Amino acid sequence: MIINNETIIKDSDPIIRKRSSDVALPLSEEDRKLLLDMHKYVYDSTIEEIAEKENLRPAVGISAIQLGVPKKMTAIILKDSEGNVETEYALVNPKIISSSVEQAYLKNGEGCLSVEDEHEGYIYRSARCKVKGYDLISDKDVLIKAEGYLAIVLQHELDHFKGVLFYDHINKKDPFYEDPDAVCIE
Ligand code: CO
Image (cartoon, rainbow, N blue to C red; front, side):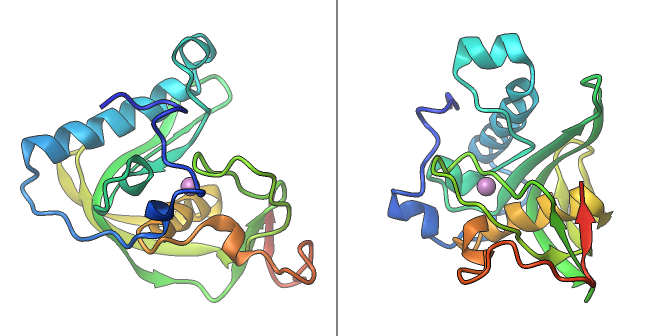
């Protein structure tokens, strides 16, 4: 599948609100191909020359519903400032098995490939979470113990499986409400 800013489903399309279903394992050839294409998108999206040429918006994650496929699959890549991959997953049926009571939020708010309008405000999520699932990159069942930015990204992506978008979490009356007990991630 060609994945670029044209083919990614936006929030104006009701499909983005659809719930995703579990995926059969071992992966079908079609599911495997889609997940690898998603992973490639995220990887390439932060390489300026490729992103510009292929119309990719920079991202750290993408979920299958954003391509109109309601299946629980997501690709996540975090790179360091030099562009080296620090963390990468191509997850199938990931599930949060526990999450901290302590909350965290990104100082600069969140963004999403399916959201083009500006939605300012803090999004409070669990500061830590444990996620279980199958990872195509390592070809293993994984237990991810996430904190900080990765924990936020995982919760953002897994929200897509429920049709939830980041701005649904913004406090409408007080978008920049600061919870003194929450961790602020710069
Ligand atoms: Co998103």
